[in-house]
Image 1 (cartoon, rainbow, N blue to C red):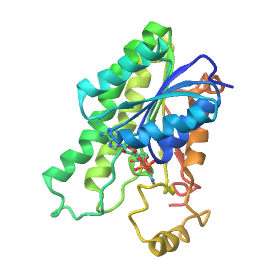
Image 2 (image 1 turned 135 degrees about the vertical axis):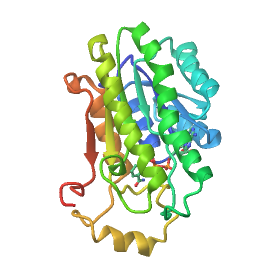
Image 3 (image 1 turned 180 degrees about the vertical axis):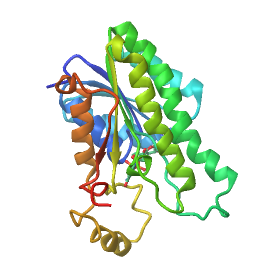
Image 4 (image 1 turned 30 degrees about the vertical axis):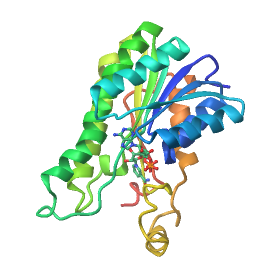
Length: 249
Ligand SMILES: NC(=O)c1ccc[n+]([C@@H]2O[C@H](COP(=O)([O-])OP(=O)(O)OC[C@H]3O[C@@H](n4cnc5c(N)ncnc54)[C@H](O)[C@@H]3O)[C@@H](O)[C@H]2O)c1
């Protein structure tokens, strides 16, 4: 019960790594706001958490919209009285696209969520954490926020932005009891990858050092560690959780 009496928001909480994180935090005692623009799925996650004995509410949130992000944080405070923890997991992917074929619309859409959306979340979350006397935040970037891949112009730059923001904001708030860290997942078996044919995923998995994709729970485990007091002297890191991919590439 590492998060007993703590209040958490999880963006992207309706699916994949965000869902696994919301469940994990709730299972360890946190009161969780499951924030997602897919409100039906967010509500379903909140209900499942409640059915398992946890405490959670769902909140429609579009992280690209400042007013919506402000309402997410207001909901945490109106429902549970404070905000201690945030897992900023919401993100969108892109199909591999050559430079010539990368439209401005695609670039703007990916950045609106992965980079601008993260900035908006931090700007709303941190003032409430300061009021609560401190807090901990984990941002989900990507291995593509630590190394470059061909044909990922929009996604890669958005995730390098998330990596940079994580370090920058950690440095600003380290002296005010707010830790800010990140995880950089490799290839994780979530609905985000499910658009690819299973044979393609299997063939790709065989090229990875561990010969398999990661799971959403393996990411949630690390997010929970970084949010917990066990990581009390850890701030500003962007931790690859990639089965050894970065080290061997
Ligand atoms: N799956 C992977 O292999 C992988 C690898 C590296 C990084 N990531 C990153 O991990 C994070 C989680 O991805 P996932 O694999 O769990 O994907 P997912 O598609 O299962 O979940 C993403 C969630 O984010 C929500 N979302 C998208 N845009 C939003 C917005 N504007 N406002 C609020 N919610 C929004 C979606 O509705 C969805 O519920 C993302 O940031 C993604 O870029 C994923």
